[in-house]
Length: 200
Image (cartoon, rainbow, N blue to C red):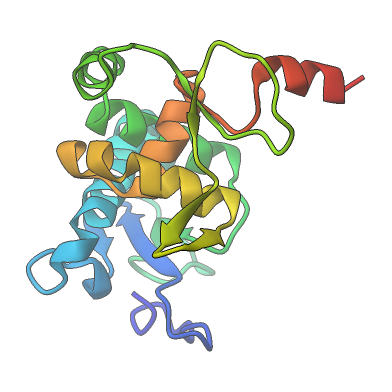
């Protein structure tokens, strides 16, 4: 996708342009997400495909097909209608396509059913508070032990490590699963009461 759109890859070598959808409805996904070549990226591939071919095509077809019959002097022939880049802030249409993909790949009812199987106590999880506090949630440890050494990690890493089994079950990335569980109220960074008190 970077070569196709003449955009240099970031210096880190990571893929920035994940996919694009064109006026004729064709969808292109970056080769670094090819699940046959990179099986570990299958979750990201499926989400990108659902985002482009599901979200944009279903929700924004009026924008994709707009003026496709009229050639523009200024637009390159076959220019994409949406290029999805991981580095850019989410515009409204990108957020909508993400949400569509999330609901398509991780339906609410199926998530709650899987949650009950993975966690028979049915309790939402919260990242272990820095200061102990009484609450009704089950806690996710902030770090992990290697031998006798406790290794602390950033919040996202701890939450995504926790989400990995569910992510594998739904064949999505741990990041996508973390975001979905947070939106559904099954996963919290802080005890919700703390959030209310902190905002005062």
